[in-house]
Amino acid sequence: MMKTTRREFLSMSGSLLWVPSSPLWALEPEHSTAQASVYGEGPWREPGQLKDRAYLKTAAQRYSAKDREIVGHNRTCFNNRPLYCEPPNDCVILAGDRPFLRLLAEPYVLGGFSLALLRGGHGRWLHEYPEIESRYRCGKMSWQIWDSALGDLRFFLTAVPLHGSGGFALRLRAQGLRPGDRLVWAFGGAAHEPGVRLKWDPIMRGSPKLYRTGDPRKPEASLGMDPARCRANHATVTEDIFRLMAAENDTIMATGKSDRAGTVHVADASAASDPARLLSSTAHELPMICGVIELNTDTDQLHWVIEALTPGGEPAWQANTLTALFDQSVAYLTTIERVQIETPDARLDAAVASVCHPIDAACDRDPSVFRHGCMAFFIQFLGWRVLCGATALGWHERIRSEAAHYAAIQVKQANGRLEAHADPGRQYCIQGQESRFWPRPDLACRWAHVQHPVSVHRPGHP
Image 1 (cartoon, one colour):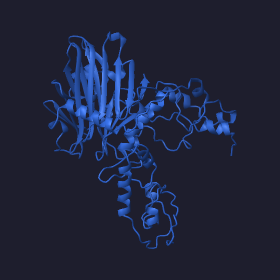
Image 2 (cartoon, rainbow, N blue to C red; image 1 turned 90 degrees about the horizontal axis):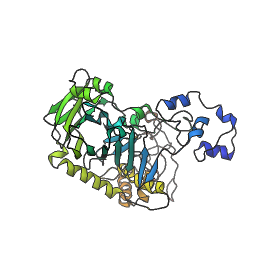
Image 3 (cartoon, one colour; image 1 turned 90 degrees about the vertical axis):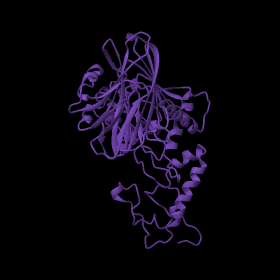
Image 4 (cartoon, one colour; image 1 turned 45 degrees about the vertical axis):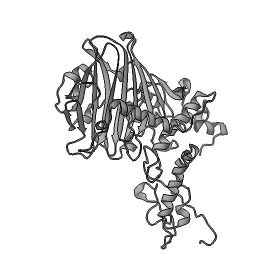
């Protein structure tokens, strides 16, 4: 085994940036730098990975922070900023550095949403603009988008998970609009993908000890509009409301609308590279929802709501305007930002604000039961350290509720089960039904990783 100094060990764990000694260079695959260039950025590493020569020459923080927001400038990733719907709704909205949104609901990708401006009959998607500032704070994602070639035109886009429902609400403000400007929007690319949270988790690639080198970004980080996923989709439009399924007769669909009258039809995603061509196309083999809205001169504001529903379900806009749904969703995110700090380090302030959202989303309701994670390993998991986050944020009533839930279902008789047996069918992450973890009350209450249960001895108990 190769020996390392303390400094080398810390560098490999992501604590320091330094040039490692020559034996470590031998571990670098030749393709790592070339792989990074595919994404249009310099080399990229996550904590726990080796820092090779190319990375160390250009290493820099990818994001800054301001006003408790995580701020990115002209970053390239799609789908790398999950926004979680309030439990028990298990939908996830994948936002990211680029202004594009993808809706997930197990076991489906329900589609992706994009916007474009048409001026003089020509245009491009907003996620392709040269200047994009992204901001994230506690479940709310916003972008400022502009192109100097279009004068003083600016777009301000904000997306939030729907409060009390599965889906998202979107607000677009624009300034510098000219007479005749039109807005094209599109939604499409649904697919049946069991295990969708694991696949689309932006960072889950296994232990960094195993994945020590190479670009850590998953292919999904570069995936925006995806015409191939539109094949065999079932799309319908009724006046200004659309419905989209991965296939006819699926159990979950996406439905949505704008609060501005326009024209909506089913286009063909084979023309998706050009918003003007997509608008003029008609559905063939790759159906994609496409709409167009005439914009007001100078400034304008619009809303969309897109929701995951079972066929026959009632959408949220039947009880509220789209503006009200957006405002209510923003207000809910404000309530879950349980802790706000003000320190000399703006990055710390933003980190504390951002962590509140996933800790809230990891907790089921009625009863409060915590899950292992919000994306990968989205399973109820007794004793996982997510409880520490809820404790630190003051959600003590949720901790008590989970304790009461598990205490009520303890199995208090050993029934001959005296050994620990992890279930190979669950990748050894969960104890099998023959494990002593389940029948022993002293184990059912302890907060520990279930992969390696250890007895907690109490007086009077074996």
